[in-house]
Structures are given as C-alpha cells and as structure tokens.
Image (cartoon, rainbow, N blue to C red; front, side, top):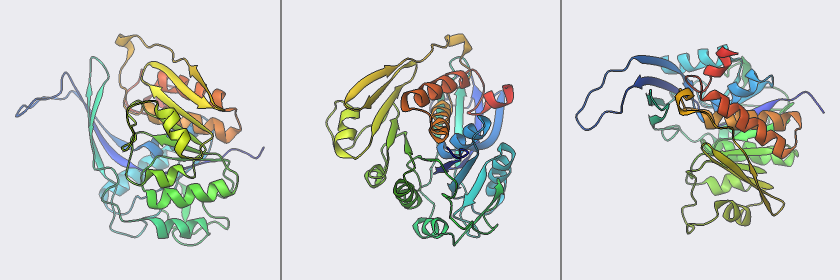
Length: 314
C-alpha cells in the first residue's frame, strides 16, 4: 500500500496539569508539587501518538491566534504534527483545560470548555477538502502555508475523528469514506450532533463512559451497530478487556494489568489508544491487530506523566 498518513480531525487544547496529593474540597486550597503546560485534546494527542509510532499525521483543527494559540502551535511543531488550522487568521483561541492528577493513583480530574466556544468550521473544512481556503504548512505550521492540490485528504490512508468540531468532522469523514479510506471515531462521550458523524464512521471505539442519550441502559455496542452503518464498534473498560463487535460477533481483547504502584498518570491513555489504533489502520493492519496495538500502547502510557510522557521515555 501507499506510505501511511493519518488525518486526525478534532480538538486541540492547552492543558495546565498539576499533581496533587488529593483533590480540593469546597473552599479548600491545595498545593501542587508538579506543573506541566502542554497541548492536549483527543485528536491532537492521537496525532502526536501516530507520529511517535512512525506514521505521519495531519491535524485538522482550530488553533487561531494569540498567546495560547502560539503555545499550542509550538508544541505541535515540536511533536512533528502537520497542522491544518481552520481558524487561521481569526480571533479564535484554543480552550484551556485544567487537569488535576492525584499522585497516588494517577487518576485525573479535568475541567474544560472543549470546543464549545469555537465558531462553526464547516465552510473552512469544505474549503480545505477542495484544495482551497486555509491551507497547511509543515509540522506544527500556522495554516497559512497555502493549500495542497488534493486537499487535506491528499495521501491519507486513514482518518480519525474525535467528535469535536462537528462542523468540520462531518464533511471530512464523509469525504474520506467516499474515497474508501477507513474512518475511526474516538467516542469519548456523546455530543449533540454526533449521530451525523457516526453516519460516516467505519470503526467506532468508545470509552467506558459513552452513553446514547435516548437509549435505555443495555448493550451500547449493539445499539450503535443497529443505528449507524459502522463496520465495527469497540468499547474500552479501563483496565478491563476491550469488547469488540464486528461481523455480528463479540470478542474481547485483553488489556495487560498495570500494578497500582506503577500508575503515574491516566491522562490521555484513551487518546494514545485511539492514536495507536488509527496509526495501525493507516498502515493497513487488520482491525483486531490494530486494537491490540492500541491497548498495548495505552497501557504503557499510564506509567509516565501526561498523554505523551512515554514518547520522551523512549
């Protein structure tokens, strides 16, 4: 097959992560003994994961302008991610996420506005899909570098969407499916309008917290497979086995256990799973093999701080 290229469409944030002994209660102040400021967001972390695993990645997102945008752009450039900024030249700015990591368990609490304040990106997405509009520059570029002849899907071998920036994600996923490219969904949680995106998804990989808002409690895998034309649906379960529904059969993919004392930070483990999974799809791997690689990389990542601490450790 052609050289693999993964296109990720979705959210990038600026994450302000602090390590604490315990989360503060009402009217309580705690002192953190660790601070890290870095880019985050499901699609951005997945793209950086793919690059770290040797698959070039192109991130279609909204960065915009201002000091927060500059920090995010510099981080993506350092990670080797090519950026297509649909908010180039606008006053938009990436959302800031506050992350508190509990030292003893590696568990995290996150507060973020996600992409709710970003203007609709549908027109900009249609522009870059057609080879016009805001362009892409090299790794971490500003988005003002001019557009490629074939648009953002030029050379792509797989696409990952994270459910954010749906105005952009829906046309990107639809165009990818028309080209016969596998489209994967990072289904962290249900978002209004996600059903429109699922209509163009081949492989939905859902979190343990994913729920359909209008469905009774039951088998989420079967419910998603019945309502949308997906080829497969998988659902993670933290440290438990990942369940996969494909071809009418449910199989379990085991996840290696990490001793509690070795868990440093669970932040971004799901992003690593999706990034590694999508990178394997971009390489042409079989579905189950790609999921096994995703779970393996995600499990390894919790032994290091942040979503990408394992990259520096390598």
